[in-house]
Length: 193
Image 1 (cartoon, one colour):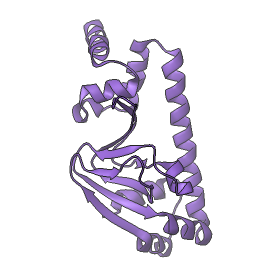
Image 2 (cartoon, helix red, strand yellow):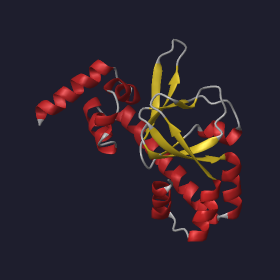
Image 3 (cartoon, rainbow, N blue to C red):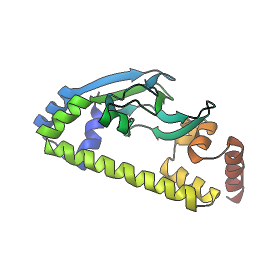
């Protein structure tokens, strides 16, 4: 367990074996079955979650119960309700498993301890947050400025294997499209090839 977590960490910030041991002592492994929740709206997000294996989605519900997917997380990704985690506030997101998952959790107290004891951890978190902000900015820019077909192509490049792992209606939700519109876009693009 933790192999991918430490590989991704070391790609950004090189750790000594002692630093890895310090972090490892504070991590908690967790397995989720498909459709099992990691977090539900209203609960408090008590941990940051790193995906070792599997796929998750984060979504919100409107007053009619319609789902709006805000994020997907695959191997090597981190997911959570950051506002809830940082402020011990009720979560606005639901996060559930799209596949059986092996996860690595880091609690708020462990996060705070590592921020105090390990400057490299703070650097790693800063890099993660920077990447997350850049992805969010790209997504927002694409949503408001690109034609649907170009948005689909950009999405496909960002998540090359997603169509084999995630149902089309969920992809449509994430892209802000109806499933029918997404189907038409995919057909038009495949006909151009």
